[in-house]
Image 1 (tube, rainbow, N blue to C red):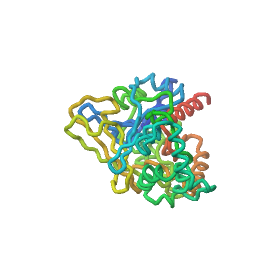
Image 2 (tube, rainbow, N blue to C red; image 1 turned 60 degrees about the vertical axis):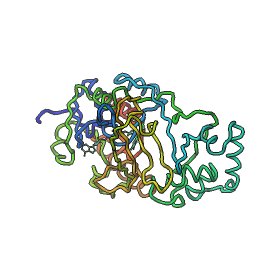
Image 3 (spheres, rainbow, N blue to C red; image 1 turned 90 degrees about the vertical axis):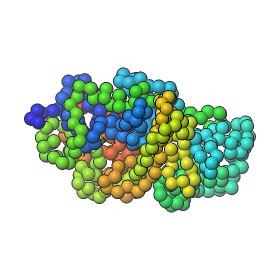
Image 4 (cartoon, rainbow, N blue to C red; image 1 turned 135 degrees about the horizontal axis):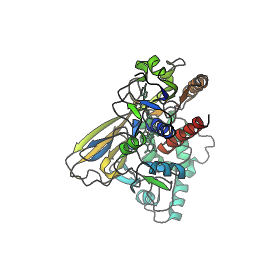
Length: 370
Ligand code: FAD
């Protein structure tokens, strides 16, 4: 390839694709590369007989950012899916987030006043804890015995792979208690799944832009660097700097997908499994995101697991060691004016999709005024 580009964008995920779209529309020449066989990064879906399977974990678009909602709606329309997950604990199903339906099932209470009184009674033995020393103390103080035992302890221990007494209290800053009969998980005014699937959003963002999949930046770094004036890097920042300050830790996930020749497996898109004896944390039934009417279904069991290099890094681990390392990487990155770092892996942060789009638009905007 001898042509030169204004921007080489490493990573065809939501960040890279949004940034590329903005620059392309403003007359900049972009090349997008991705080491995976497909575009879209973690929002990519595989088609299984008309069902869009969220290969890298269930993705529900939700936002309170008017400009982001309008922006994504330029590229795709959204359906009216509302996330209303269930939690299975020892065979009993409870509605999430905690709301009147949950308290009714849990304690048999019918009114908000009864629910509030019960919650206060449950919390009372723990209110003396002023500075919770760990997640267990924090959760007991916020929600009391039943909420902690049924919804938090075993689920969180599975998710993080260690006892709640060894997890920092800040993981749970607050518990979202609602006192209305409302199972809508999110508080945002806008929510849905792209009609036709997430790949339509990615394809539309990347329309007219040169994209090369199965192309790892690190396989031929010097060559790729020579192709463009500037690089937008959305991969792992520690890898970019050859792990100079050490590896950043992640929590990973393993997805076990299964096609079933039945119309409906669980009657809901998301069912959490709270108890420790079930090794997965949730089952996703993908067709329910899009109100699918197929005669088959696809489910995915989600198993949290330790991260090892080579696996997919999912959740950053915000402990002191990683934050210190990230600070060093950030300082190092600031000294490279022609490389811009964006997206969840380069910033070592969890971003929802709307935050990702917003951050990419912001970076593109800054680039365009320079
Ligand atoms: P990515 O999607 O990870 O894209 C980065 C891309 O860079 C990848 O395609 C990767 O292959 C590529 N790349 C990396 N290194 C290289 C290299 N060396 N060379 C070439 N290419 C490279 N958000 C929501 O709003 N709602 C949800 O319900 C939701 N659910 C989630 C569930 C899970 C399990 C996770 C982990 C995240 C979820 N998110 C959700 C967040 C959402 O996934 C992110 O906001 C979004 O995908 C981030 O996009 P990105 O482009 O930054 O990263």
